Image (cartoon, rainbow, N blue to C red; front, side):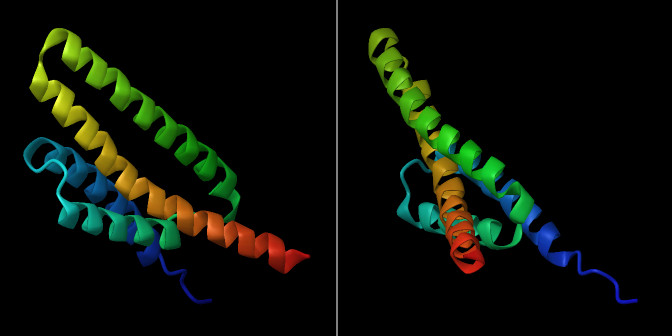
Length: 124
């Protein structure tokens, strides 16, 4: 009996972990950097291709929709808080971190949704 290849899920899990750590570090030290956004987007593509299987698709897509909506709304709340309190570092850093999180998660969601559309179209 052949052994199952466990390399791809491990790569996907590490890409997700590294993407989130990089998003936090970049949000603090290099906010709004297009090259970092590109790297995080590529990591998101890897995550979408290798890390989400068929039975996790709906749960993953619902979670990504909820997170992207919440991240956008929360960034607005932080901006309002920053203007009211005047604590600019917090108001600039946290929205950058959330934007970088979305840069990781959105491409993964796009790939997973395309795979789901293909599965539905192929089963008809």
